[in-house]
Length: 69
Image (cartoon, rainbow, N blue to C red):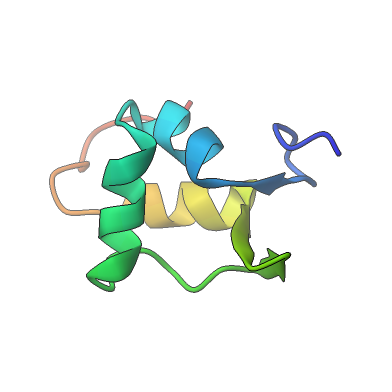
């Protein structure tokens, strides 16, 4: 499954690469309720649509004025 497309689903790894942090940081965000609920769960693993991630990144405090990739 191709994950890095707008229609595809992103795992912790892809989200981490997008926001330039480690995957464990993204897991911590989810644990603390800072990440939106996953769009899909497969085999117990959460996945998010790229658009969901981009909307979340745009709404994060401290990202005002940053342009999305």
